[in-house]
Every structure is written in C-alpha cells, then in structure tokens.
Image 1 (cartoon, rainbow, N blue to C red):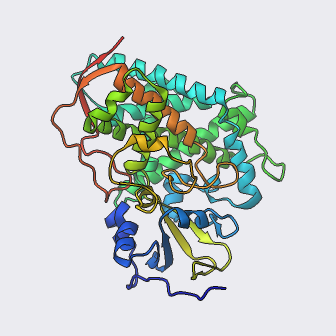
Image 2: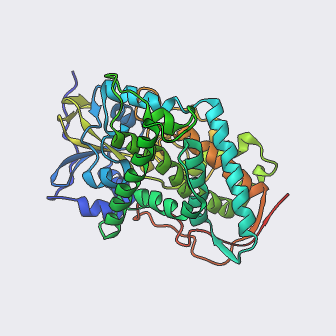
Image 3: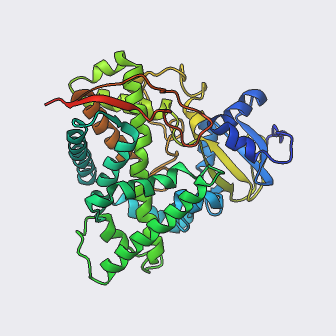
Length: 419
C-alpha cells in the first residue's frame, strides 16, 4: 500500500459565495494555484473535495466509490433536477430507472428527433423572414419546446409555446442564482410538475390517448425495480428530465451560431452538410464552450486514491468544463479545432460536457445522443439553409454566470431561407 499524502486544502470557513462568484473557473483557478487535480475546500459549511481531469473522472464515476443520493443541493433539486429523479438514485434503482430513459434512444427515436428539429427550424425561419430582427437564443428555446413536446407525446397548443418555453428554461437558467430569479425557477418547476402530473393522471385513467412509443405513455406505465408503478409526481419529474434538457440545448445552439461567426474558416467545411464535419464541429462546440460547470456526488465508503483519503459522505465536485479544457487530456485545449475529433478515442472520461462514465450503468446523460443530433440538424440549418446578418452586438460571454450564453443572445437580421 502506498503512503497517504496530505490533500491540498483551501483555507477558510466557507467558499460557497466564491463558487457562485467565480462560476466555471472556481475549480480551474484552484487547480492552477495548488498545482493539483485534487483539493479540499469548504462549501455550504462542510468539507468538499474538487476533482479535475480524466483520471479523476474515472474515480468519480466508479459506482462502488461514489453515490448520487443526497449530493445535489436542495436549490438544484428544486429547480434543475426535481426531487426523486434519476440523477439522485444509486444501485439497482438507478440502473432500472436509467433503462427507462435509454429505451427511448433507438435509431428510430433519434431519427424522429432529427426530423422534428428540421421541421420546426423551417417553420420558425418562415416567420423570421417577416421580422426585422430576431434573438436566436430565445427563438430556439421555442423551437426546442415544440420538438421536445411532440417527441415525448406531451400536448402543446400553439398559444402556450412561449409560456412553456419560458417555464422550462427557468429551470436550467436559475439554479445557481442567489437572487429572486432562483425562486422564479423554483416556481416554474412546481407549476411544470403540476402540468405534467395532470397529463399522467389522464393517461392512467384512459382519458388521454397517446402513442405507446411516446415517453408520456412509457413513463406513465413504467414499473420500478420493485414492480410498482412510479408515483405520478416522479413520472412528472422524469418527463421534465426529458423536456428541460432538450430545451437547454438552446444554450449550445447559441454558441454554435457564435462559433460559425467567430471561426468562418472552420464553418466553411460544413457547406453541403457533410455529416462527419457537422459531427466534429458540434462536438467541439460542446467541448470548447461552457455548458454546466461541474457535477456532484458523495463518497460512498471511505477509500484512498493516489495517496489521498476520501472520507465517507464527503461532497465531491467533478469539474466538467475544466476537464474538457484540461491540458493533460487535450492538445491546445483553448483553441477551437473541430478536426481534433477525427482522432478522439471516445473515452467516457476526458470529454464530459454532460457528465462522464458509461450510459447504461453510469451517470452519463441519457440524452447526450439527442443533444448531438439536435445540434447537428441546427448547425446544418444555420449554415446551409439560412441566410442572415449579425448586426453589431455584444457576443461576449461571462464565465461567472451559470449557465452562460452570449450577452446579446445572438441577434440576427435580414433572415431568409435558402431553398
């Protein structure tokens, strides 16, 4: 056995406010100053461990060493994840619930996502042609709300699209906000759960017909690992764990438009809609630009790794953004180079914008394939089916805001479809 080492430690009583203030750079800053991919700090009054890099990610996604139950702070559960959802489960319960999500990721399901994405981009672009200016980020949230609802079988009237888009986006735009905006997200989550619960009741009472292939039907009748139907509220939470993340792809699409603008020589290779080039570009957007900064777990049982002691129940954060930019894992990590994915070995631990590990048994986002397909269809539409002008605007983004998007949210003028 190797000799234990003293883990680098940040002095001070609590650094929660610093985390909120520094955002995506909180772990990166300390990794640099401490010259370590592992360090101890204090968050929410308790000891916490921060990890970065692919080697640390391998340990973090070891289900024998870490658990998710009780790891996410209440404010995050109340807005982003919902209480009782798959993100907070472990063991057989997690494996069984995760299989419910993965059953929707067949080739036919993903092809349907691509078809719907293209359909609603075309409908939106038709309306944009008559407008002087559009704000892409806000418009894409509405596009993806339509996509998400139709794909899951959740009914959506045209007059409620904007309302539901705002409601779903409030859940992922407010979890790290300490202002009144956080309560807006809390309220949005509560009302959205009530909305979906009513639909689940209607399905179970045979008052609403929905195709068996749709998530609304599949989740409503899903039985847990004990053979019992899920509570109606849990079904609502999990359906929102499909709807909300699909709408959240709007963050990536805003950055996709920014990348097309900032790296025109890279975007030129996308002309003609080559699938491989679209894939590389979309993946590099996911690696290069910020999405969510970190993910949380707790130590399952005390263990030692690389000489460092991890005590049972210690909150542990894995740096998602920092790992995607880690110099030990990526050559020239601060350059936008889509071609790097031509040689990427598809490791589940160095490229983790939506979590790492394996899909079926780990905590990697079940909707990652959906994200990639929606991004590719959106990128193809932006480059090959739309003509527009980017007027003068502030396209900068802050690494202290979680999540972050370009300040102007990407304004477009002179929008015309290319037929």
